[in-house]
Length: 255
Ligand SMILES: NC(=O)c1ccc[n+]([C@@H]2O[C@H](COP(=O)([O-])OP(=O)(O)OC[C@H]3O[C@@H](n4cnc5c(N)ncnc54)[C@H](O)[C@@H]3O)[C@@H](O)[C@H]2O)c1
Image (cartoon, rainbow, N blue to C red; front, top):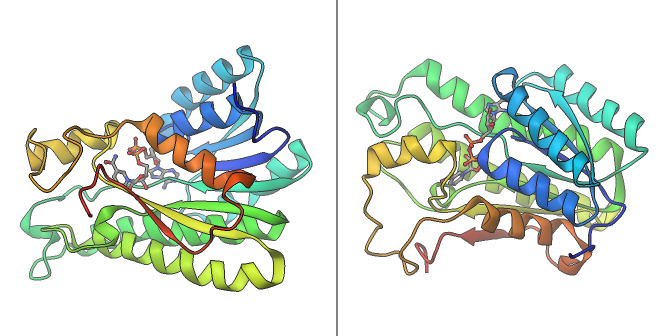
């Protein structure tokens, strides 16, 4: 078992989701103490994951947080630092697809206002709220990973709010890396997954169909543990000279 995160304290949003669960488990297996956050609907799942981590000898805590609510995010990070004594890193993975994903209500002609606000609220403002709270308490030399998407690097059809939010995450990541590197040696990176088999995947497949795109080089969908590996690497010291980058993890969909 790798121990390259031993002693680190890592905060993680989207802790009840597909990527969040695998990332929390892998972080804990490599020696990190993990503080997981997610909305109410997934707190039972998250608690079960935390129990599993604890039973395996790891350390995890769970908090119900809506990343759109600044006070809730700030309180979670403060609680984490009180419980674990410090903060070394964060994985901001909470995110949603629009309800109208792949319909005309996600085109520029007909964009639905409420969904625009909801998706940008979670995927973009939520990441900003999370990073702001985390950085306030993070040790110099820390590391942050944010979830963008290949939809944050290229235009995708009928996907306005999601695409805009994920391009925004790339911008947040790069600006924060520029601000935090020189002054505090905090690294900030984002990941750009392709299609990964998580609960979000069902909604994607409904729109895309089951077929793997011709332009994808590895002819299968990705697994959440493959995302977890990348997040763990970006959060540990083995990636110490990497900041402000977008890390595509898409089976070569974008080459
Ligand atoms: N699965 C994919 O194919 C894919 C591809 C590219 C990018 N992503 C991104 O990766 C990240 C993780 O996605 P996933 O596949 O694990 O999805 P998922 O739906 O399994 O997990 C996302 C989690 O975010 C949580 N969440 C939603 N709104 C929240 C809020 N307001 N506050 C706190 N938590 C909230 C959900 O409850 C859920 O547990 C997301 O940001 C997603 O946009 C996913």
